[in-house]
Image (tube, rainbow, N blue to C red):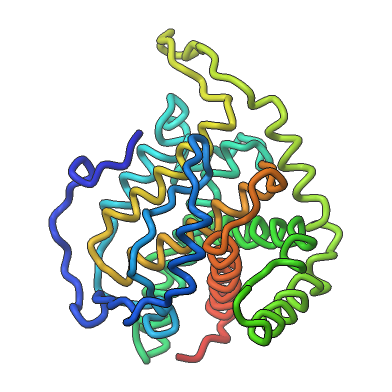
Length: 326
């Protein structure tokens, strides 16, 4: 199940060099180096795999997510076949696109798989939005990548991933409202805190459906405490049925390793940030943030991913409603 780049394989795909190249900020911000170095701790069962602190910091505004001509289909194939629960168990024979329609949508395996699919759909939306200045070409590419008629679950999973991150934001209201964003700069810290407080107090987070989501998701995972030996009904073969929530965390870390196999620098950067945000959302919903506070990179990943998913949801609505204008 480990995401090994040599195992994933695949030829080096075409990529427009200028679009794929990302360069770190120079000089590296000393205050961030010191803070991130101090916050990074080893945790055996963490939701995310943190890279060792380095002097490489990137400006996402300088390298926005978009079309680069890179084909990462082999990476996604590996993810769906090996990291999603539906793809890596006996259930894969009856599941389509990494999702088992008969599964409880609040079940923790389905939550993980739908989050992968939702992130994939979000990336597709950002790519299509930057694909061409011609509306018809963008629509054709949108239909090719997301196939809303043949696979409506892809857009449903996009909305699900957005709701998941919104739910985490709602759950972390108190933590984020008092978070120290820039301890060494009182003015900037106050400015950022005001913006985040405005975000977490948005009326959208008080929607009844959203307020019920976290309890339902935790209820779906309450029995996920161990691994058991199960038997396939058709073949009679025995296999390990992963019921421990730790398997979700393990696969979440493997997702970040899989992103390292993406050969386009811009795609790899945005893919890792997006999954870090989703992993942080899962940690907030399923885990305990009181014993180990949220790290700066987790908060940044969560809020950045919320913006990514929200933009993708709006774009998908415009495309499906015929309101898109390139």
